[in-house]
Length: 220
Image (cartoon, rainbow, N blue to C red; front, top):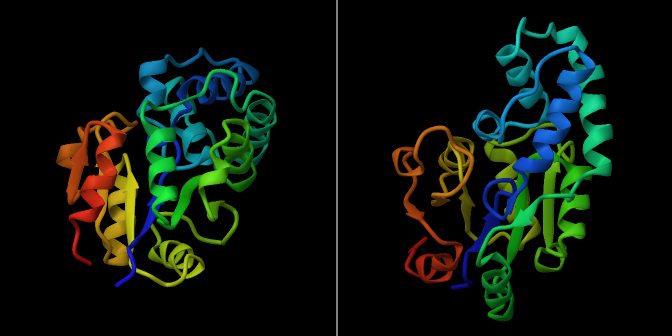
């Protein structure tokens, strides 16, 4: 029986992207004459894509933005973020060593994120993480995103159709796995406003280095 594919979220799981997302979000707010949001507030807004992040930030700093104005604000966000993709973003401790271990053992690895595809590719390339992943799916690659089970199944299919395990940090990752009838592991250090151990995952780890041992214990 082949080992299951390991499908990783990006923001809050592999990389601490909050500092650069904060810069892009505050660039949008500044353009609208709004006050900036602080890092603590921003961390609880991440994980649902750029559009949701902007909606939440606008609502937190004044009148909610009308849907008709969102596309222009998303473009401001993306223009800033594109040129500051990894100014301050850092890979979480243990990620590189663990991904190398998994790759050396022949594991099939993928990224599944709601970050726009272009930005996911830029970030993973800038931090030299792209070499670990045979498949990278971001928002816009398909017409649907997490937690739609179809995108999880698309990734699994590209990895050879073996069973998959979702590894993330948020309720979105749990919902994706549950919709796809797949196991899910959460890291405890991510961007969820509610503690990871309360989100209904099959397991929660405090360190990324715990993942290889844990996935080998799963029977799927």
